[in-house]
Image (tube, rainbow, N blue to C red; front, side):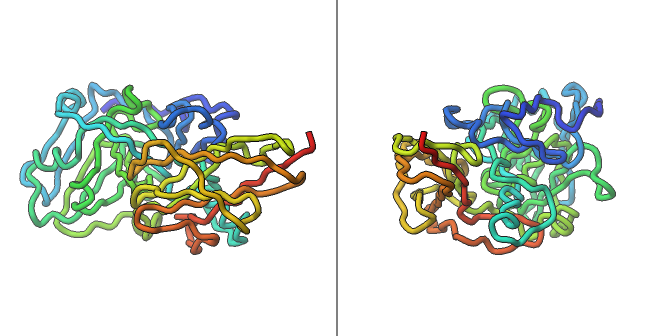
Length: 349
């Protein structure tokens, strides 16, 4: 395998599209305004444990092995591309998306990258269903865990990023993706191939995929013990397509746009409050209602009072999960799902 070390992130990160977050880059939500359903690659967030590797597809191999398979399998990039494809629209979201609000909003600061709400993106992914590869390799009936491993540099003394999935999830809807929004995966997003695990925290969607081990016993890795403990399905969240501390003029009519999502199912209702939660209005939505992606919505508003205010948006998914006003505290800052207080200012003009 030919690989080259590069800067932490390869693609340009202009400040009007991104906020740099240590080894990652958070999308600015105002950058999604008018962009359609999918997140363009040039503004899709990046979360790296180390640095983006540049891999040579001519020498890249995907190895499937373990005691949960009857026939170990090694695939080339060309062989992967020649298999029957599948396409899904799915969100990838960092488990720590919204982490900074534990401190700024709930006064319960936690360690870790201080993501706002921009560590999420929705893309159209094309690739091969993982279940097809597992069937080719002779998946055993007593297989329990599927452990994917990335080809980026080892993280500290924990080795390569690797995260187990239960076989039931691996067989359900997981994709070994090689395209993103109609083009080959960019380096920062997993070229030549990556997992896309719909609905689950982004750490499961291993980038730069190189190894899949299938085990007949439960597997623990640092990415289930030291990090991302008790993290799997993403909760319900909402965001406005607005700059932080956006300015409005009193008396003018506005159409505000936003998006809501849930890892567990479709969004069925979005409500917006302009008075700090004293009253709520239903937002309109005519976009696609995909179970593992997001729902675009909009609402009209004409501000009446000058000064500093907060906008609130809360969503409900098809299982009845509603965003709370207070998120349960997590020691590593994961799964912040409370209604976010988006600050704005209204001027007299």
